[in-house]
View 1 (cartoon, helix red, strand yellow):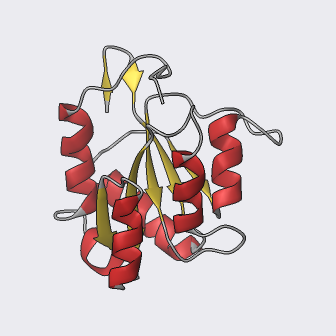
View 2 (view 1 turned 180 degrees about the horizontal axis):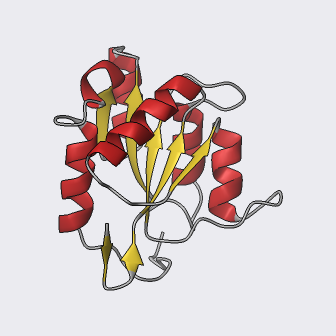
Length: 151
C-alpha cells in the first residue's frame, strides 16, 4: 500500500519456491501492489537490508516475512543478527513458518517479532496473513528515515 508516496516494501525470506509463489499470489488476490523482494536465506536477507554483496539496499519502510527453517542462516539466527544491528534492530518482522514448535515461538517472540503465523493457516487470500498485512500497513505509521534511536 502506498500513502503519501511511501510504499511499504515486503522482504520475503523463504527458501521454498512454492510457498513463496503462494504468498505472492495471495497478495495479488487482495490487490496488494506492494513490491515484494524474495530471498532464500537469512544471509541474503541481511545483505539486501544492508545493501551488501551487490544487492541494492531495500528501501524503507519495509516489513519482513520470515521463514524459520532455511539453509545457511535460519530465521532465528537472522532475528538475532538484526536485533544486534543498530541500523536494523527496529525492523518489523513477522514469522511465517510450518513450525508449530513452542520453542520456536518463544525464540521468535523473545527476538521481538510482530507476529507468528503458521503457513497452513495464514496464506488464504480471504483470511490470515494477506488480509492482516493489508490492514497493518494501512493503519500503522512508519518513520520516513532510518531510526537513530539510542541503544
